[in-house]
Image (cartoon, rainbow, N blue to C red; front, side, top):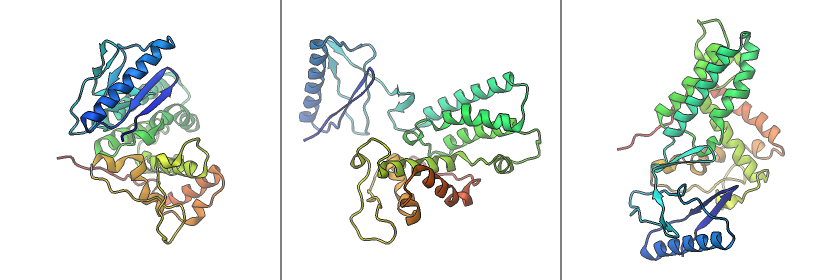
Length: 285
């Protein structure tokens, strides 16, 4: 039996499920009717003009759905809580949107601030620019070379604004200002998020994301069961891409009691790759 999930945030409502047969298709349509009936009974009407259905999967039949007497339009792309979700599940459009937003912010900083002292520009970058490149990045971390390059190019531009010495290379600028490549930052962010999930700092159900390995292995006791995935894009989902890295962490990191302590230890572990520009990409045929 297929289960469907209702996900609500403020005035947004999502109905998510798997449809692989006519029975499941009718079940989903029945759930939509119930949802619409609830909205009528409680006089919390849905704006059907803004309602969209998005189909995922190569073999998806793209069936039609309706709310009341209105057919729901089908879309290939939709923004959800500031993140662009594409039908292909690739993050290229989100990377473009983030890069464009950051470039506008950098332009504003360059035009507005007369005093471009390194310390001032560094703080502006860390407070106004970099958060836009890391907002909810666990959901859209890029893996294609062109997307990684696009975001790293933004940080290259930002570090050039921090110094008047044009002879410094990108790596030298990162070392000078104590920064890392964005790819290293994203790996660090993934590990911190997994740590918070395992230690209960996030109010979520761990089993919805990870399954602990039952095998007796060397290393720590919080190793994640490694799933077998077939789709290329699935390999780079948050819950899959982080498994090998998390499982290889030393016990000293896993035994940390606070987030601050874990961050301190993980920064030491990543110090050898702080300035290394690593490509993680895959080609589609």
